[in-house]
Image 1 (tube, one colour):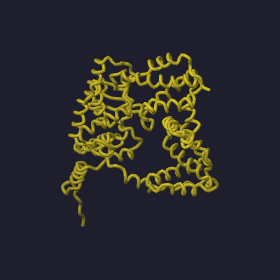
Image 2 (spheres, helix red, strand yellow):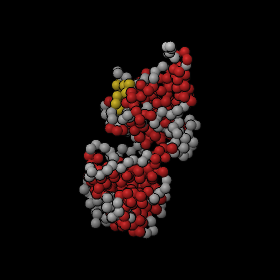
Image 3 (cartoon, one colour):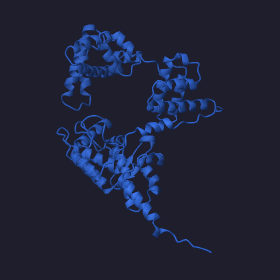
Image 4 (cartoon, one colour):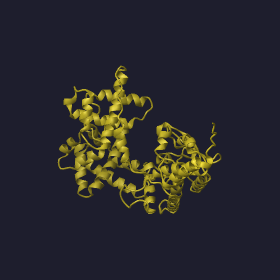
Length: 454
């Protein structure tokens, strides 16, 4: 039985005091959740499943289900802290998640709130990872690739899905790999699943060839991937007027509780468009990455484990200069490791999700994206726009874009120009400039005279 510390009320206050909470009302919610759970613990004398079920039922009569789930996450994080400090043996919510191999604490909380918790928990049970006939083979391959420095997260997910399928189809254990994959392809008929099966076949063939070099390599089939690519959403190329509208909205973004947010969002948009940065790259920027004397910015350890130093335009450097001046006036941390973009409350760094949420709000305020849903232009389309506008400028300056593509790929942080070519969306302006370049090249006046001999 997991005992509750006798000085629980003091521990709760100390725990809340050390949390980086943004709003003054948030500690009230934390205190309300933890104190109510403490009362339940005092009644049962332990932090076990029975106490959790009682607390969730009792709170469910007072709060909405969504509120109970939110408060349960607060309790779960608090219990993790107690377990880490050795004040309690373990967190019962985490124990249940591990025992049933559930994907999240939220699923466990929902099961405990149901009329029949034991049945609901059993329904959460997931197969143990890599416990199929090919599980050890796939797990060893994933771990080997990760030791070599690859993230290999997408491949890990694909292998785990196939592993769960094989655990449900024990009749396929003695079948050849091709037969297993054929049955897996029949699970779904959509293009994404077929493309995933093709990628899985390549991964497994790579594994088997590593263990047996004499095994003939499998010929890849690119048709499923191409079929998926046909259904991709066409990137939206923003016009210069659209860019100006977005920047104007960001500069006057309504934020009464965070006065620095407009200049932060404005500078983020400038860097997204002028340097083609990804949202994750913007979120990771620090003060030490900005070199105002040279006029460059460093992008460190980003996608494909690449780092690069990017020269910026004068307008982008002007935006950064204004941001740094605002930081100085706001008396924000000047440490080189401090985030370049900061919240007014607790001076914390903007995360990727927060940046994305505010950018989408700007798109909607500009009328470029519907008020709800995932349709319409994306923020990542600014990166596509950066590439298209850069190529347009090269055409207008008389520069051959094909010669500059390797430099553009390096600037964007791509491994090769093939990744950059995906960003080249053919617009009417781009088509016109390319046509004019070809017309001037192929016009009769530019043709070299041909010597006629008898």
